[in-house]
Amino acid sequence: MTRSHASAHPRPLIEQRADPWVLRHQGRYYFIASVPEYDRLELRAADSIAGLASAPAQTVWTQPDSGPLSALIWAPELHRIGDTWAIYFAAAPSREIVDGLFQHRMYAITCQTDDPLTGDWREPVPIETHLDSFCLDATTFRHRDRTYYVWAQKDPAVPGNSNLYIAAMASPTRLTGTPVRLSVPEYDWETRGFLVNEGPAVVERHGRLFLTYSASATDENYCMGLLWADADSDPLAPESWSKSPTPVFQSDPEHRIFGPGHSCFTVAGDGVTDLLVYHARTYTDIQGDPLWDPNRHTFVKPIRWTDEGFPDFGRAGEGILG
View 1 (cartoon, one colour):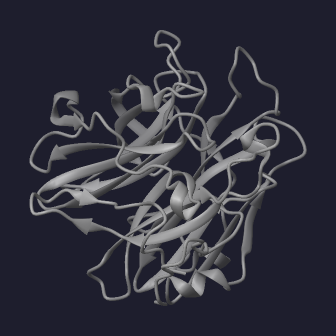
View 2 (cartoon, one colour; view 1 turned 30 degrees about the vertical axis):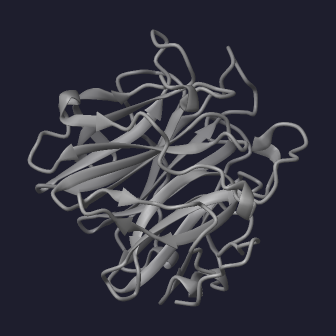
View 3 (cartoon, one colour; view 1 turned 30 degrees about the horizontal axis):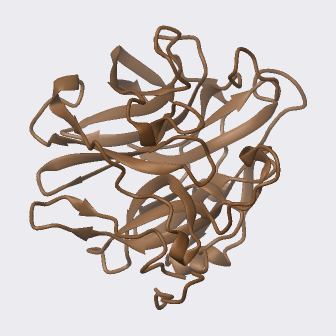
């Protein structure tokens, strides 16, 4: 791992990669993210976090020319579930906006080979939920010998763009039971530009499950919220979860880091230090829709833990590993 950059202009680990996901598996780091063209899924791997910056990218799937997965490939994540590799992602049939929303649905590709970069990936299958509506940003986590799926979705009965849901998994591509809504955009910082809860990520530490998520529009208003539950409670019970009334990670104008969010967790090479991986921009002068601005970059920084066992993410522009 390289030194931290304490200057007022921190450098990203990887440029022009939004919605980053880093998975450490058997001592190796795997990286996947949204590419600016929104047209493919690509993986890279390295023996260190720093090595991901120069690691070659391997395309494992490309969008077809037509059909329900032919546009806007967003927010992929790589997961290892048993002996199966799974990449969860969202795709749309076009760039058309209908009733104020894109038309994304969630999909997965899977393979059983040891190395996901050279795996024989199966054709995408849809991940069916309780609603047939705009949905994206799926993640999974393992807890008490059970795998859970968390995602963002539009409920026509709830104002706004997306809420957070959780369900148990029967297999890497199928949910089981009734999905549970965990959070809706309700605070001012969750509703700037758009009413959004999205980009969930889960880590278990100090006897609690912590779930970070992102809120508001994808400009400088984008920020990160936090839910938490006792590790002995039922993750599928809404009453198990508490919600921070204030954002836990947000724009840091002094260091020119704007709209930090869509984060994930990994562990440093020492196997102890927890790291936050997130995307952000280094300016606010965005021309047109922020989604078409390619300069959301991947940043990485250590997480501190309070005496009470809660994560302290600090300022978005401080302590960045480059």
